[in-house]
Image (cartoon, rainbow over all chains, first blue to last red; front, top):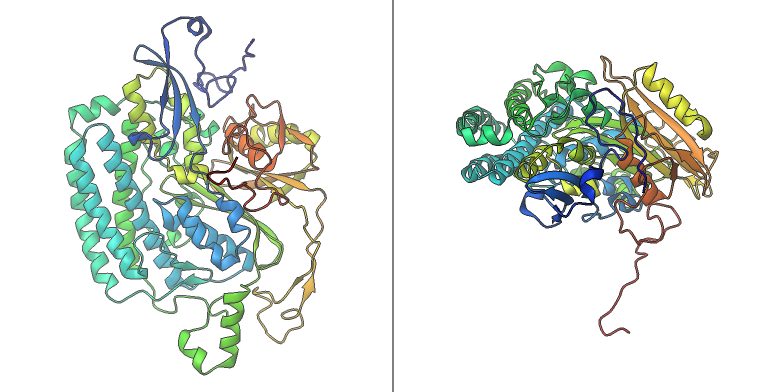
Length: 419
Length: 163
């Protein structure tokens, strides 16, 4: 079968041709007896879920690769079309189960945009704070498991120690450790408990020391450097062409962060740095995420200091549940409560696309409403989905052992890829 | 901003947007099925900023049908420019069932999987795509699950002992 060669988009582009996401075995090797095809996954400890990679090997060299996804498809988008708006909020969190708050946030922001709703500042700041805690949480899981795959077993336990502190904070706020469903259209589900601030402050004081510990274990560790430096390079042009975002893009030298460049929540009022590294290899992705954890800790600290007083949810009885105590005395409150719980609130007709910077990159949510109590269509732009498209490009000239490091550095969560 | 584009001119429009206007980043491709859109009235009150007054005529018992759409399917391309201000634009093409649209993979390689997903879940065909196959569902799956006429729980249940 003749393969039509497509000229590369940019000179020096490493994106495979003709299919950008499939590295095909070169024609001169295709007929040789030395090619071994290996199924990597779908159940493999280092694929972070159920990712299947069909790898062609010549000795230890990777000469062909194709990613197969879909093993974790659960039909979230179809399910959300059957639920009322406020019941559908529980679904997005389960899409990306490592950075749950972000998925919840982006859907809630989309509803609020369609409703043209004002959110009280306290809710905005608390959302920012919780999202940055989630970013630390997500990067900790990435660091712990990523290092584990390359043989640094002890780091996993350190990372999960700090992760547990974050989960304790989530539990304090909303009663659940994961999948919190704390964001409502209009604000937060409940007020912030008083004990949260001192505990969160303790965490903010502790976290920089913990990050110092991680870096002491890895940054000058020769094995770590050998396994990560110069591995899986991705140029800035290729990264943009392949739709990479977040740490992947910043590790390739593109200074781009939606928190700064397209501000939302309380980010315009916060002081933070966007780490950018030029080489686009696994090591730079590691450094970007380490720096981001430090910056996120600073953001959480600023949120604690700047947290405004006031209501935590908008006073809009058509959308927001009335306060519980009013139900005993006010008939109107009871009616509103009944209407919202049974029928749900209605969202005006329209379509909206909202993006936020999740730990994995640009997380988008496209929502269409027909004016009824259920979403007509919900679509998530999953950053992990785009990350995995870069597998073939990063794998050029890689060895089988590098495959683990490269796939780990993409930081894809399969729940989000397959949705 | 939404640009509604004639399906035949999609690649021209996208080439212009990428090369002349600097929209070098394709965020997402989203197909939407509008089958059954506007067939029933949407009754009830709106919780909008303007419609909060419970006594207002537009607030309660208000029935209307949503705006009709030009065709059954819409395919939305969300583009972003990587430059200060982060401008975004939505390119929208309208397609009938069975109608295909040109692939944008030559412009943005990231469109590869997005178009495969649109084909798999919604049945939109993209001409010139190098590998238009199922991506999320199994290779031998029948139907396109995100279509509005695809039933929920449409998968037949098999019992043990069944022939």
